Length: 262
Image 1 (cartoon, one colour):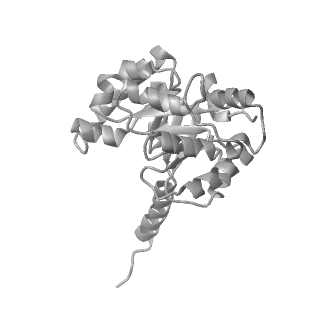
Image 2: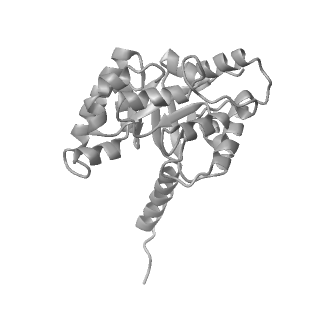
Image 3: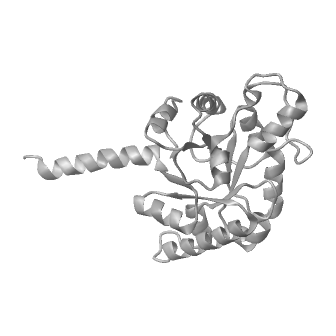
């Protein structure tokens, strides 16, 4: 079965650069992002209107291009994890994990027995439509999936070490906006310092337990900061934000040099 390049790079500690897909639903956007030199794309199903059918089509093209697709489901339930994995998604970015028990459940849903309890389903996108001996398929699928969990509350950070130690969790990250909201600093002068403190705590826990670190940012300086901090999976901005910023910059420049006449 095909290798998961995203997982392979993460295991080597290579820096990977990607972006959120929050608006563009045509799978062809993956071809564009790959041509731009990105290493992966991350589809947001928690805050965006993407359907399972759309994501399944994206996953098919991603596998054909060997351009890793990461998906954030609406939640880390068995239903969502199973459906996405069986649709051929190899990399999950699971939100709102607050306890070691939740982390263990997510890890279990993502892998077959004996290390997990992922449901078994014949053949399909998840087997690349090949009929394989069950033991071979199960071992390959368990080794290929990559699971990142998001810590987004004070409750999660109160149990950070326990969460980071859960077997089967491959990477840790924060949800900066939700975390700032939960900590009561969203939109305040303290937000940046408080989030940076929590990022450092997460990196320390990840290093202690051999997990990768994923971070998101919306600036070039932010990318450099996250790499210096120790993150190797960097999500830069989103399709919608990059489009808006590019057009807004052009419009503002034209308006400055060619002001409207009365």
